[in-house]
Image (tube, rainbow, N blue to C red; front, side, top):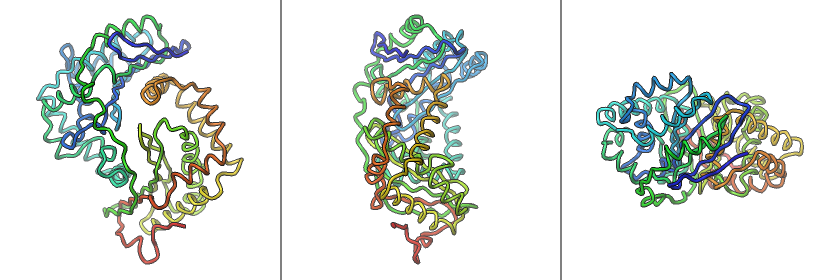
Length: 424
């Protein structure tokens, strides 16, 4: 049974005891990410996450690394467009050490200038890594196209120019402006005693009373407009990489289960329509899949593929034909049942471990302010009908706002001379 409590300062704690396991995952989730950055702060949310591992008043960067290894656990962090997360997964008897370490780096990181200069070089290398990976780069270029002019369209890593300019005062100012108890969720899943962990967390996080974040909160947040168009980026590669984008839904939208079913039907697995039509039947691409990106106030459905340069128009044409079929007829009963079983199976497998359960606790709290049980999730998926899928397909899969981004050994002429971006 899950529990939700509030610490003395308002920090929310969501917990799920799992007595049959021997591990526990603890995560600190801050409701701040890339979309909360100003134009001169690109990449600062992600950089701040990096810097929290670079030394505190009690621990050097090396000691932090050695302590994690000594626990025999897993510690990491990640930044999204809307959240920043630090987490630790350890054996259940080590939860006190884990919470102490998490609290120390979260509250007492020093952000020393020499460490900042060193870590800037690390992030610059990370940016170069993305530039060298065409599958990552095309999705970054596609987000910039679809959500252009909006912070959700920016790279989480930032850019090289802004990264080189970051100073310690920028990091401290961003932390003071955005981090506060009201925007913090601590999630715990695994084998632990609820009362003991609640007391431990109150000692570690409940006395933090910075008020700065509540001043600036989510003031920069506004919904984006999803834009269409065709963009071709020439680069000497062995393959062409492409993204085809449509509108999506916000994370807590009432029709989200139908949208996830639609996505799974299109490109959610080896049995999906696009995988079967493009790879298995026609051999046009090695990689073909789709994913649904949902934010608090918007969403994007993206189809991704990698193919030979000459095959790009054919791939786009088949995608459009399959999209049009879903818009016109919706799925057959057997196909719908198979897809819903795939969704439920994927969900269950993802939630078998403590990390998956901890993440779900936090995401549910941030997005909806409540825990969504597995029984409710399965019931909602089972309730999706073929008509629901067809209706959400007609709403989201709008050819007039379709966006196509291509990266590789191609030119805009690939879509000319009768090879237009094919609306059926």
